[in-house]
Length: 265
Image (cartoon, rainbow, N blue to C red; front, top):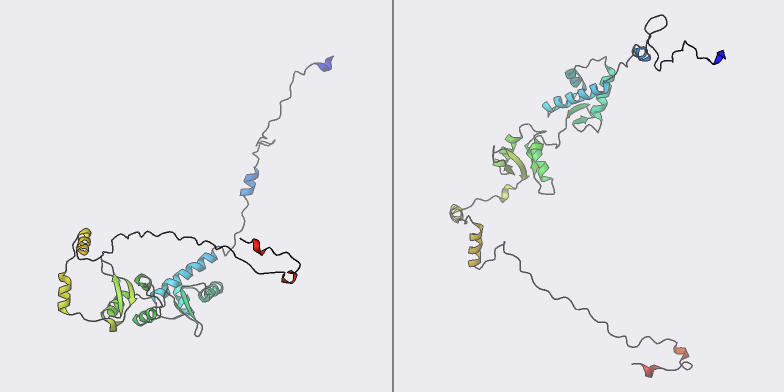
């Protein structure tokens, strides 16, 4: 049977990966090559939001350098070099300036002017005294926070301290004011020189144990003395008295029911 004989010319198995070479001998283009060759157009306003917020940062810094001065919108846009033709940027900035969420810009709707808004509305000595007097607590105010809206705050604090209108806590290294409190000058009294001399003449012992022993020897109780535990007896529970008698009921059936009162213990 001739048809059962194997063919001497074997057919080659197809390759699992197609060849990049075409039948004509030229190199075929891969799909990735066709995709990368296509160039799409980009939107023209990419980065507009970031640009506006950058201008907002420049505006806040400029208003802060002119802290106590109100500026018009034209003065701000002239400083930012924004042309009149750029209506979109100008409109976005004006909306941001007047937004209540912009906490660092103070807007005056009467004349449409803007000013830097610090953490505390304190820009001078009178503002500081007014703010401290209006507080219901004796909490101090940080000078670092005051510097945000008051450039020469150290000089103003020094003047108020000399007038004894405020109390000041200073750093030990540079003697700069750190915290301020309100003060009443009428409560400041001059001490007698003899009293000051007697006060400074009393020297406290450097060792705390020596000071405690001297207080005990003088019959005084030092504040560092341990508390004596007082033994307290536990409260005795009150015993309930036995119930004697009770409210008589069914009195209308006294002639019918049998009397067992003589059997009570």
